[in-house]
Length: 280
Image 1: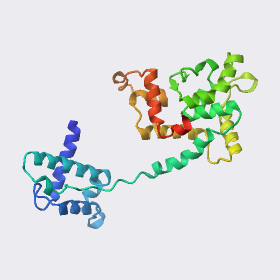
Image 2: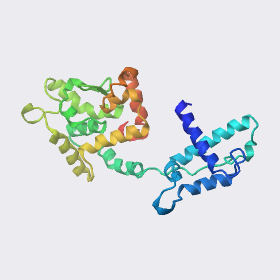
Image 3: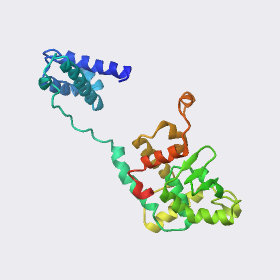
Image 4: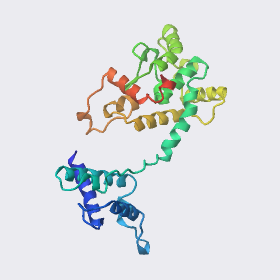
């Protein structure tokens, strides 16, 4: 355990000792109940009980966890009977998920459905690239040679983004045609072969959504959804620059190694494990 964690646990145990009526080693389960009751207590004149601010939700669970560690230590030294400690058999209810996390599944459903709509190959390719967090500027600046279907990766100016097998299969029809006949032009050209604008990506999402009758989807929502999924799954810090396109703080760079291609693919598949039925 880190020294800072030990200090925090000691503070929580000391705070409980001040509340316990019979002392710390002689504390009872009634003292735990009294501690929980004091959390929502309010003082007069509009003041808030300090326990209200420091022991709430996650803090209360961490306090109970610190007490379990302390009484386990005391039981090893035969200072207390482990079956008679106030935390013996104590289980707190699971925390309620954040409303935003509960809404993530409902919000993601139309975006995931859009990936499997049959449409023009270049529209389908754009939507799949958006689903992996690419910005419209990165997509419109791609050349056919930047997409390596065999290695399942996309080479961008500042990073290399790995792809799943389903994403590579969805990109294959359009990418192979452009590599065969228009290798020197943009992968998604605009008018007269010039570089396209953001309206091309917006048009791809809008037309596929109208074709499938899907509402409430937009171009920027794909990147926000990809970021939310990665952060929710706990993305590894060394993979943040390549997978999310977010540079690390200069103070962190000397301590973080550059991930290999295999490492990026492994992390991507771990992050996509729960939605692999949509993205492969």
